Length: 109
Image 1 (tube, rainbow, N blue to C red):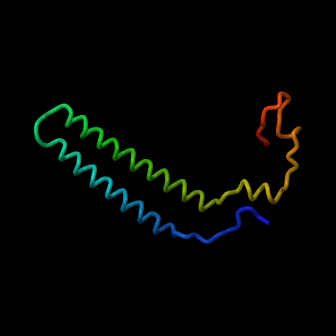
Image 2 (image 1 turned 135 degrees about the vertical axis):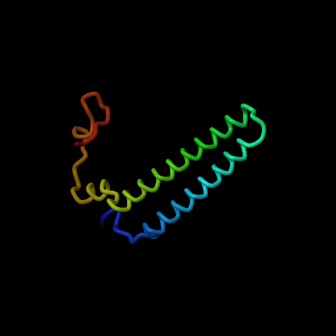
Image 3 (image 1 turned 60 degrees about the horizontal axis):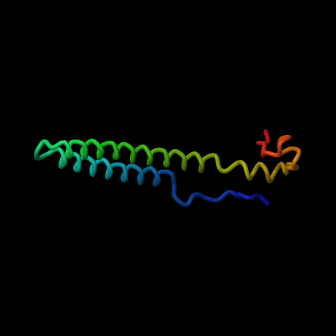
Protein backbone atom coordinates (compact mmCIF):
# COMPACT_ATOMS: atom_id res chain seq x y z
CA UNK A 1 0.00 0.00 0.00
CA UNK A 2 2.96 2.30 -0.46
CA UNK A 3 2.44 5.31 -2.68
CA UNK A 4 5.86 5.03 -4.32
CA UNK A 5 6.94 1.40 -4.65
CA UNK A 6 10.47 0.64 -5.70
CA UNK A 7 10.93 0.50 -9.47
CA UNK A 8 14.07 -0.47 -11.34
CA UNK A 9 15.92 2.31 -13.15
CA UNK A 10 14.89 2.82 -16.74
CA UNK A 11 18.14 4.64 -17.63
CA UNK A 12 21.29 3.45 -15.85
CA UNK A 13 23.36 6.15 -14.17
CA UNK A 14 26.40 5.40 -16.37
CA UNK A 15 24.31 6.00 -19.48
CA UNK A 16 22.87 9.18 -17.95
CA UNK A 17 26.38 10.53 -17.29
CA UNK A 18 27.48 9.56 -20.80
CA UNK A 19 24.55 11.50 -22.26
CA UNK A 20 25.45 14.46 -20.04
CA UNK A 21 29.10 14.46 -21.18
CA UNK A 22 28.03 14.20 -24.83
CA UNK A 23 25.55 17.05 -24.61
CA UNK A 24 28.03 19.17 -22.65
CA UNK A 25 30.71 18.54 -25.26
CA UNK A 26 28.34 19.54 -28.05
CA UNK A 27 27.38 22.73 -26.21
CA UNK A 28 31.01 23.64 -25.55
CA UNK A 29 32.04 22.91 -29.17
CA UNK A 30 29.08 24.87 -30.53
CA UNK A 31 29.71 27.82 -28.23
CA UNK A 32 33.42 27.82 -29.04
CA UNK A 33 32.72 27.79 -32.77
CA UNK A 34 30.15 30.56 -32.43
CA UNK A 35 32.48 32.58 -30.23
CA UNK A 36 35.41 32.35 -32.65
CA UNK A 37 33.13 33.14 -35.62
CA UNK A 38 31.73 36.20 -33.85
CA UNK A 39 35.19 37.44 -32.85
CA UNK A 40 36.58 37.18 -36.36
CA UNK A 41 36.03 39.96 -38.85
CA UNK A 42 35.74 43.62 -38.04
CA UNK A 43 36.05 44.90 -34.49
CA UNK A 44 32.46 45.89 -34.07
CA UNK A 45 31.06 46.28 -30.59
CA UNK A 46 28.03 44.14 -31.40
CA UNK A 47 30.19 41.18 -32.37
CA UNK A 48 32.17 41.40 -29.13
CA UNK A 49 29.01 41.62 -27.04
CA UNK A 50 27.44 38.68 -28.92
CA UNK A 51 30.62 36.64 -28.41
CA UNK A 52 30.59 37.31 -24.67
CA UNK A 53 26.88 36.52 -24.44
CA UNK A 54 27.37 33.24 -26.29
CA UNK A 55 30.13 32.25 -23.88
CA UNK A 56 27.96 33.05 -20.85
CA UNK A 57 25.05 31.16 -22.40
CA UNK A 58 27.37 28.16 -22.67
CA UNK A 59 28.30 28.47 -18.98
CA UNK A 60 24.63 28.73 -18.04
CA UNK A 61 23.69 25.68 -20.12
CA UNK A 62 26.48 23.54 -18.64
CA UNK A 63 25.50 24.65 -15.13
CA UNK A 64 21.83 23.83 -15.76
CA UNK A 65 22.73 20.39 -17.12
CA UNK A 66 25.03 19.74 -14.15
CA UNK A 67 22.29 20.74 -11.71
CA UNK A 68 19.78 18.53 -13.50
CA UNK A 69 22.17 15.57 -13.48
CA UNK A 70 22.95 15.84 -9.77
CA UNK A 71 19.31 16.41 -8.83
CA UNK A 72 18.15 13.37 -10.75
CA UNK A 73 20.98 11.27 -9.36
CA UNK A 74 20.06 12.21 -5.78
CA UNK A 75 16.36 11.57 -6.46
CA UNK A 76 17.11 8.11 -7.81
CA UNK A 77 19.53 7.31 -4.99
CA UNK A 78 17.45 8.47 -2.05
CA UNK A 79 13.99 8.06 -3.52
CA UNK A 80 10.92 10.06 -2.63
CA UNK A 81 10.75 9.64 1.13
CA UNK A 82 7.88 11.92 2.12
CA UNK A 83 4.93 9.94 0.68
CA UNK A 84 6.56 6.70 1.87
CA UNK A 85 6.95 8.09 5.39
CA UNK A 86 3.37 9.38 5.52
CA UNK A 87 2.02 6.05 4.32
CA UNK A 88 3.98 4.04 6.88
CA UNK A 89 3.46 6.27 9.92
CA UNK A 90 -0.11 7.31 9.07
CA UNK A 91 -0.17 10.51 11.19
CA UNK A 92 -3.52 12.04 12.14
CA UNK A 93 -3.54 15.34 10.28
CA UNK A 94 -6.13 17.26 12.27
CA UNK A 95 -6.77 21.02 11.98
CA UNK A 96 -5.26 21.49 15.46
CA UNK A 97 -2.02 19.92 14.27
CA UNK A 98 -1.87 21.49 10.79
CA UNK A 99 -3.12 25.04 11.44
CA UNK A 100 -1.98 27.78 13.79
CA UNK A 101 -4.29 29.87 15.95
CA UNK A 102 -5.07 32.20 13.00
CA UNK A 103 -6.05 29.40 10.63
CA UNK A 104 -2.89 29.49 8.50
CA UNK A 105 -1.28 26.22 7.39
CA UNK A 106 1.59 25.10 9.59
CA UNK A 107 4.33 22.65 8.71
CA UNK A 108 4.27 19.52 10.83
CA UNK A 109 7.66 18.93 12.41
